[in-house]
Length: 331
Image (cartoon, rainbow, N blue to C red; front, top):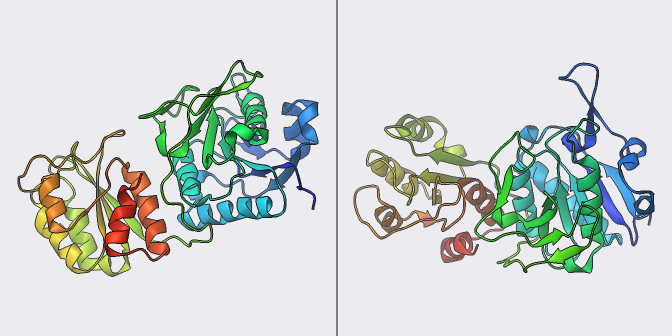
């Protein structure tokens, strides 16, 4: 097996694995022979590269995320010591979070990316590739699930937040900080903490296909909910509501959400705040306490994007009733 005792490097696109062509808008995927020039020579023999997809992450579906993670799992089953995945930054948080929910292997699964294309001034291609391979080779990272390597540090997928699409320091970890940091760009990996991981689902789980998010806004959202009820509700397998701060929604949503619940579609309540959580200590029409009493499931501290992924995998694995409710809050 060509990848036994090596690090499987899955090239799934992203700026980190593309270079610019003549036109600033054109990008060319880097083949392994060109990409390895960004790595120290001593790491070349440690890596078994595999091209997967160079599509933008905006073209991905949850089923594609599942295919990618299953490919990573197959590499470990064939003897790889760890896996590194290159991808774009645009949906890195979602892809890594999806993987973390189903990655039961002790071997590290490391996602990495770059804001800028390979070879341009300011690109992190060389740094992030080398650090990711170093992390995947380190016993420190075993048993930590899917992790993200950017900004000279390793982060758990559950705490990772992308807040700027134009800055190399556009990521942060909340509520906890990094799992590990590099003492210097090519230095030792220093562990800081261990991740807390809840129930891990089977890597073969096929996620539900149609899970939608509806965002609360002042006086908005009614048309979208009515459109779902009138035309497409039978296609929806689950719904995530991104409420105001504590999880509140406009009172006009309440009867619409009741109708959706009567169709036996699970509805998860989250906060639209990037680092928010459900707070059910007030009671009024459309408050979090009111909605939870109606039958919405609490998303706890999950972001709407995380709740959508978690719900899709939960439904795909057959969780229902209390098991589903417990799983949505086990984060």
